[in-house]
Image 1 (tube, one colour):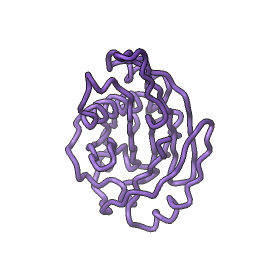
Image 2 (cartoon, one colour; image 1 turned 30 degrees about the vertical axis):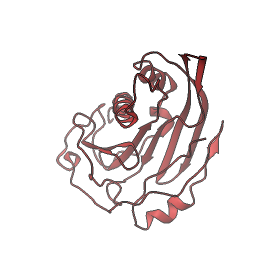
Image 3 (cartoon, helix red, strand yellow; image 1 turned 60 degrees about the vertical axis):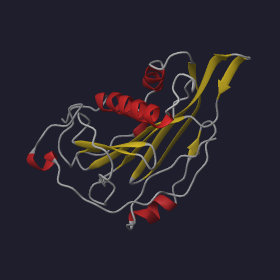
Image 4 (tube, one colour; image 1 turned 90 degrees about the horizontal axis):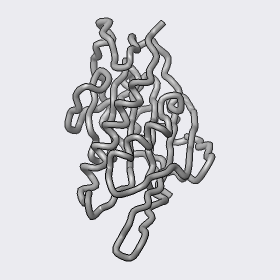
Length: 210
């Protein structure tokens, strides 16, 4: 099974991430964290700017990852890739501040010259919410910028993840959607497309600040 990977900086917060405990409702593992260069950037929240989905202000509490990542959205993104039928066959969730993780594993079934081909086991769609992640260096824009998501967003090709700044919180979104590789041979492009689309759906579930 594909492990849940949390991208953490080389700060004191890394000690917390090292003790991350996973509550698995169906199949999951763990892996070493991927280091990044600590970086804190100013955000429109400091000037009272709005965020995608309606949330405002860096003081807003970090939402639960599983309140934002929904199986219906995972399947809706998966359905945009043709010639394969995708279902959910696993779920994980965990919370150890500042980290909150939610994920769904996907199984794909497509036709092949030999009959039916099933792709399963390592196809997680996952959201990691890092509370005040910008303050502790979890937003380090070292990849291509993605416009229209949160305050700022970029694609991290090293871990196939869309990283989104929402106020002072950081969202990490990945979607290793199973596809028919005959039709979609460029898996890097597939993962970026899927994660970007899933991030947009996740942000749409943010509640307006009260």
